[in-house]
Image: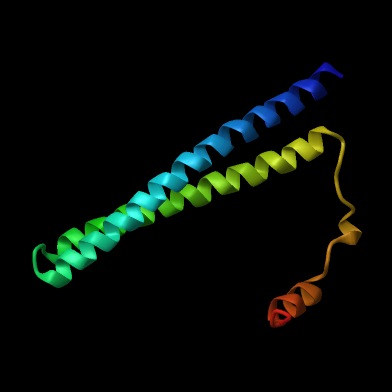
Length: 110
């Protein structure tokens, strides 16, 4: 029983920490996008070379990948929290591949 409480607490702590990381990473992404835009504008104005634009793009991509990694870890911690709380899902209740592909091809309702 103590192990169950420990798992719940561990996953709650992980979610709390990852949420903070996500907030910080959102700010980093915003700054990287702004830097990328500035570099592109400077290149168009002829004040910097294209290598500087590529460097800004690489930095932006790295930061976007980090944001996706944090989101992935948050989702995994959420699933582990549900599992630690005794929740779960029935495999039979999951949609089949045909239902998933049908839902993906529908256009949004207007």
